[in-house]
Image 1 (cartoon, rainbow, N blue to C red):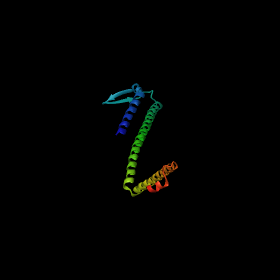
Image 2: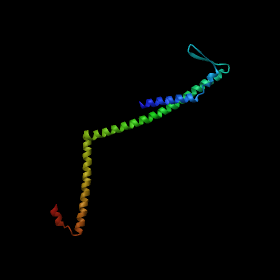
Image 3: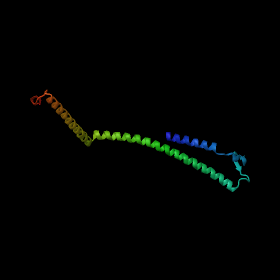
Image 4: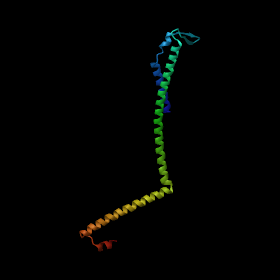
Length: 153
């Protein structure tokens, strides 16, 4: 909805810009009249074929240029709008799939158990190394003997 409103506002702005920048005064120089509520203009002798074609070509060239600019603006706006929407949608889907993978899947359960087992082995080894260092320091200071260690085990 915002995209359509933005495109409409941009087209309205471009239309007003064309109205302000285009010189329509040449129409008043012609012989114009009204018949049955319709306005008609007859070109005088100053308007030869080349002048007429030049004016029409210039008019349509300006229209095409403005429309190409408008198209570029709308395309850039659409790109960023789609990109933002797609990014949020992708993040949402990834979050859902990761949750589903680790809660509903046997493979996910096995992977979690494997990781936890590896972490616990590393942690146990670290604790065992620390205990060995403490025992060594205590035995070097004479505060702990081998018979004390055998009784504790």
